[in-house]
Every structure is written in structure tokens, then in C-alpha cells.
Amino acid sequence: MKLLTGWLYPDLMSTYGDRGNVICLQKRCEWRGIEAQILPIEVETSLSELEKVDLIMGGGSQDRQQEIVMRDLKGVKGKTIKKMIENDKPGIFTCGAPQLLGHYYEPAIGQRIEGLGIFDMVSVCPGPDKPRCIGNIVVETNKNYNIYNDYNSYNNYLVGFENHGGRTYLGKNIAPLAKVIRGFGNNGEDKTEGAVYKNAVATYLHGPVLPKNPHLADWLIKTALEVKYGKKIKLERLDDDLERHAHDFIIKKILANK
Ligand code: GLN
Picture 1: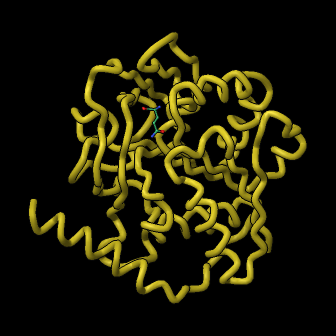
Picture 2: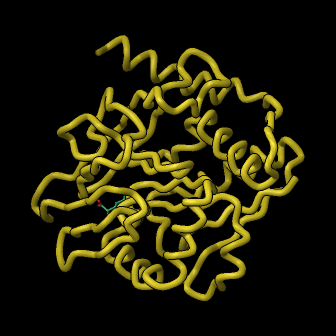
């Protein structure tokens, strides 16, 4: 089996270490004998290349870079990504990336950036003099999504690190990814974190999020392969006790201090 991950604008959207998500997906595939390729999606990337992608990853960036990226995404590329997500291709979008997939993002300084409107949500930065949402974050995932059903007792939690000025507000047609246990999440007010639409996951969690939450990485790989090959896939269990212990340790600590 083969999995092609499309990585949105590695040069412009790699400010917060989300490259680790791509490495994590690649390694977890390779360790199972699944051929993993990465396609950087850049201004020069053609539509025919983009359409071959099985899974999309978009990382964090700064307001200025988001504006440049959005100029490129506005045309056919954006429409193609929308179609891919509507057709159930999975995606993991962190922080700056989901801000562009909502209806709009209002940056700290400058004009509103119109988004692709794939996620029913808007993001607004209250201004450069307002505090950013920074720190470790733990969230409990939405039980309506059986993203984590293969794993142990802490599989319904995610851990990460957030660093954003923008605040995201969800519309009626989208469900949050999770409930905030510790941290800010979407806006620091309503306890929601991230969003899920079809198989596309939006989140404020860096860390990067996938190596810190291997169950989420495996759900993305499994879903991408199921959509691509049109059959149920059972991923081989990896020897990843260390990653799981690290994940569970921090969740237990946070829950104990609640
Ligand atoms: N520029 C956005 C913000 O500050 C995104 C930051 C990020 O990707 N971490 O809200």
C-alpha cells in the first residue's frame, strides 16, 4: 500500500514545528511496510499533482505568511482541496492552517483574509496588544467521533502546545474536535477546541500534535487508506509504548490536578 501526504506550503507554514506531523505520518507508515511519500504543496504545484494526495497536512504560520498562502489558495487549488475534503479525504490542520479553511481570518494588523469556507467558523485576532493564547493544552475529544476507538483508556484525550493570537468561533454546521480541560482552545471562552468536518481535523494543538498523540496519527493513516482503497483497514500495532506512556502520563497528571 502507498500513502501520499500533501504538505501545505512547507516554506511558508512551518513556523511552529508542525513538520513533525509529516515525519510522524511517514515513519508510522514505513514501520508497517506502507510506502509513504510526501508532496510539498507550493505555488508551483500543479492541480494534477494535488489531486493525487491521500491526506493533507497544514501547519501553523504567522499572519503575514497566511496572507501569501491564501492568495495562492483562492483559485482552483482551494476548490480542489475543498472537493478532496468533501470526498472524505482526511486532513490535519493546525492553527494558522484552519484559520484559512474557515470563512475568514482577521489578523492582528491589516485586512481580513477571506478563507475557503470549508469549516463553518471564523477567526479573529483581537489585536497586537492583546495577550496571545500560549501554553500546554489538554483536551477531551468529542465522543460523537469514534476516532480513537482502537486504543486504551486515555485515547479520548489529546495533548499539545498552543500559541495563537487568533480566536476561533464555530458556526452551527460544525462540531468541535474537543472540550478544553487545560488551556485556551478555540477562543479561551467557550471551552471548545478545534473542529471536525468529514475526516478533516482542525486544531490549535502544536507539539507537534501527531507524535504526541499517536492514536490520532494512526486514525488519519487508517482513514486515508480506507478512502483510497475502498476497504476496511486494520493497522498493525506498533511498539510505541514509550509514546503512549508519555501521552498518558501528562493526561493523568493534568486530570489529577483539576
Ligand atoms: N497567525 C495565527 C495566530 O497568531 C496562527 C498562529 C499559529 O499558527 N500558531 O493566531
